[in-house]
Image 1: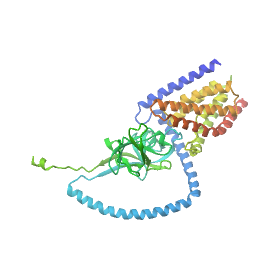
Image 2 (image 1 turned 30 degrees about the vertical axis):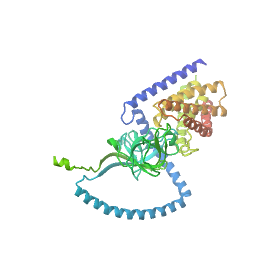
Image 3 (image 1 turned 60 degrees about the vertical axis):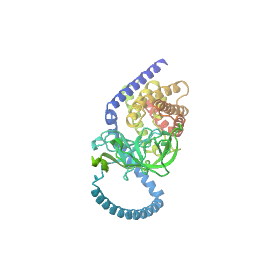
Image 4 (image 1 turned 180 degrees about the vertical axis):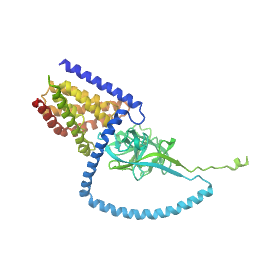
Length: 291
Length: 170
């Protein structure tokens, strides 16, 4: 019986050596290590086929089970669209007025140039320990690690953590390793939107570094802060659902419900580059002028 | 000593069965959610193979499956599945050799062991890297093990057929 034991230890040592090798390769790679890149590239067509099969089956299932619900939703959306069109007309008038005033005040024009690459979700993470997505575009399409991924409505889904030739892994905002600079849209208070292992299963994330007496209310919109320029500003993360004390009781945290429906994703948009210019107000004091 | 061609044939069939099980996981099991958890079949494959193939070939198969899974799936650190599955296979082979004869009961036991061991190693890594919530993680590991065990009934007959048929043909 001793021989298999020794053999087992030998195979375990090989496994450990492979782990060290893969770790070293991952450490020195920018987007993804060579072996995972090759494996991901080979697996991509199979994942795409599996995603297509799942989508088709889901489509049939939805057709049977959700027809009435969709009809009602369609009616509601038509009403909502009519309301939004009225708001849009008003916004158009406001925009023109804003442009005139901006010209009078000699302010720089605000600009939001976001460059998108659309991608399809090939696979959602099978494990119960993380919240990741695999998409069908990679470095060949200009996608790099650190790129933000949003829905068609512009809601933040997550950040690209690994990019292969024709695939990329996206860590969603729910994953416990995720951390994004955030702002409370109403008050402008800054915070950090973090994935929380305890909230991940409920499809929620936490808002931390709020201080002891945060100005937060149920439903407050949370957006990206864009500080330091890593990620674009004003991407919608979600809305506040609950404010409570942190585990150590020293701080307050908020439970945030993501705006994006992360379990229903089929198509996503990767922000491959961005150029945002916010207005800058130059206040010139009379004293300064006198000098 | 078995002829080389026999071994090659058998392990090709095992590789195909593994691919089939990978497809089963991504097409069927990943769509299932029980109490917010999804079954996780991968640790079952090396356990069942080690039960049938013993302490020499089982861990080698487990290492191969672990490396492939590690390259395709997110893992706590590179090579995690390789280590976890190989360790599981070594232990499962010992159970099958010393405790219970390979079969349904042994298959369920070694699968549960492999799932629990993979979960325990994950918890250990998570704790070592600073991610807390031991109780929650233990609940996830236990839940994952329980909801995956029925799927063992799909893996067992398939691997049993491969083990028996390949032995009978040569």
